[in-house]
Length: 445
Ligand code: GLC
Image (cartoon, rainbow, N blue to C red):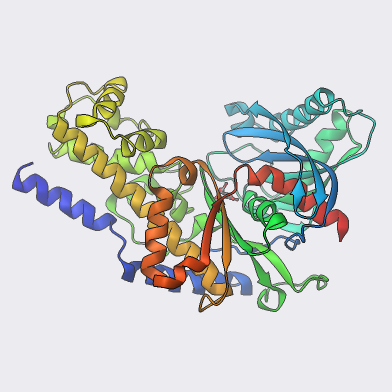
């Protein structure tokens, strides 16, 4: 790299950096947005009451659960045995196509009710039997009860017409009836973060945060009823309730020119700002915009004219994970990947730069996630006076090399020795199982 190239690159690196001071700022702003959201004031954090408390671990029964919200749609059958024990779920995956995500409400809900029917048949559950179903629907839903809620807006590239503003449980129940399985009833509606938290806390009473860092990102936690000032309904028996933060929409963050470019041409401009800097749907695109710029400035690939980095969303977040995890000599795995997407003859120096960009973009994502997580924990327990288990799930957290480690490093910087009180655990498939747990909590309250 020439001195000029180094200068260009270092300024990008600096712009993506999140110092400990930045993390403290994020935490402070996050707290203030959380409080505003809980008061019903204007805030980038919706702070949605979920009408459900954490499970005790004693809930029992057989439940069907449905998980919609990412690239796959899954139906699960699960038995809760009490004492924090549950059966291994029977799971069937159904591929979601563009017409389901972006077509009409009928195309989407007919498809999912048909999948439920198919699942009942393959599980030999009699169609005429009644069954309670927990529905994980991972979008911003203003809940009006444990089994009802209106979709506020679509996220993560979904846009099925006729759903925003509607009660998604009603739409689903209608589709079930239309399909001849009206005896299957949705008894609980949950966000995936709530499902993840519920699954882990069924067996671990220290668990009080659920986080997803996958296609989208979000978190939930239990809040004291007295702090939910906007609550107007009758007080529930328990004095706390889980809150779906919808943290993907947090917007008190420093944006680089690349973030501004990404947001500027997105279909939800000005929204889901944190999600656009953290989640799998966007990470690759942020990196692509940096590559494109470096190519134009002739710092990378000798300024090649035709490149896949010119194409919107042409560089997937999965590629970043492969590149960040490349331990081969001369980054030959990266060379093959680049060749596969149309960049041949990259130099070792090019590849090193590509890898550094992937690391910079994903490290920023991990440090923002850690700051937001720290904010949620310190909202409940200012001085970290007790232990907290955080249940995490999602492709970025699980699969991006170093992501979890970078979150841990950030926590250590923030809390020094006390950071040990925060335990981060992977709650695999928590969102699906959790819908069954929530259905069980609903049935027992
Ligand atoms: C998006 C959705 C949110 C969900 C998250 C993770 O941010 O709006 O409801 O929890 O993705 O799937």
